[in-house]
Amino acid sequence: MAFVVFSHGLDNKPEKDYLWQLWKRKLAHDDGLDIDECGVPSNLDYWADVLYASPDTNLAAYESAVGDIEELNAKPELQTMAHKGDPRVQGLAKALNVNPDAVETNQPTEAEVAAIRAERVPVPPWLRDRIMNRFVRDAHHYFFNVEFSPRPGATYRVGDELKRRFIECLQAGADKRPLVVVSHSMGTIIAYDCLKHSPDCPAVDGLMTIGSPLGIDEVQDFFPAWTRNDGFPSAKLNGPWVNVYDPLDVVCGADPHLANDYRRGGMTVVEDLRQDNWGTWRHSISKYFQGKNLRTRLATMLGV
Image (cartoon, rainbow, N blue to C red; front, side, top):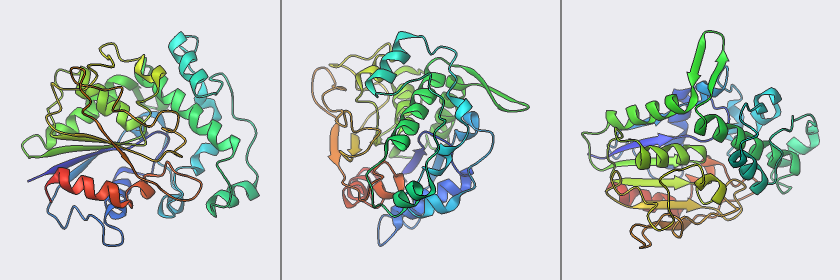
């Protein structure tokens, strides 16, 4: 029996059970891929609580498939980075054309937010900058294993905790095959890092990365064992790596293709799969999961 481990992306999220069920519902929507009906158990690698004080309660944004924009208007103080002077952090910020020192002060107008909800305008600069700043911040805390307290009484070493949670999710399904990871956004970094660099990470039979920033050179610089000719996590990935992208996705759009950057012994093995979404906000996991190309390929990976 197959088993799926989902790993969510950057920024705050609703509580775990809601998000987990949402992902499955979006996959199954409109005669799609219903993994519950197919008898495929799953788990969600949930880590938003490591970086945020409380779950996002604006569930309407997730149900609408615009997704993941509301919380970006809050908590500008989270941009503070103790190691922001590190050249790798500066390089990543420069590549994404954002200032890691910036504090988000200019709030969007009600008309701007309403226009995005109605999908009538391109992604505006204020939203693009917030997304990229949050990504630089999350990547920084993860790669530098920053000690962070999202709320009183809770303190984590971010890198250690996020890796521990991902590996525990895999261990819960390690006796089932095929074991497939479906990761989005920042979650693709965690999944790849564990599969490539963590000796205690269980082996998996398939990896799907969605809207992944792993193609960005400055992200690759953080991986000590990465090389372009042998970046594939061969020791822990015993099956396909399918990278799903929309070329207009603001997070992966700078370099959405991974096949040329994660070869195995010089051979191209990653499958880059284009999945065109719709509207102005193309990074939404809700939209990706409703795509025929993604659903068809995932069904094949799961053997259903």
